[in-house]
Length: 46
Figure: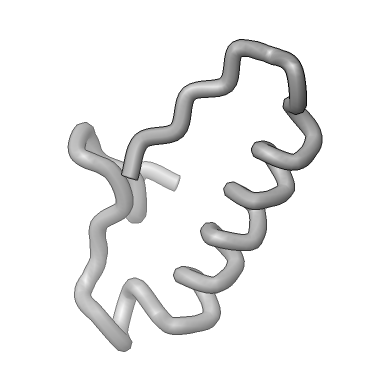
């Protein structure tokens, strides 16, 4: 995971390391986390 996540967020060369499929999966998981943490102190940074 250190390959994709750095101190400033997700990193990678577009369409090589950071594919559209990976970007979609990251977004889908982010939505999952937000939907399942209702009422908790959840922080979102974009």
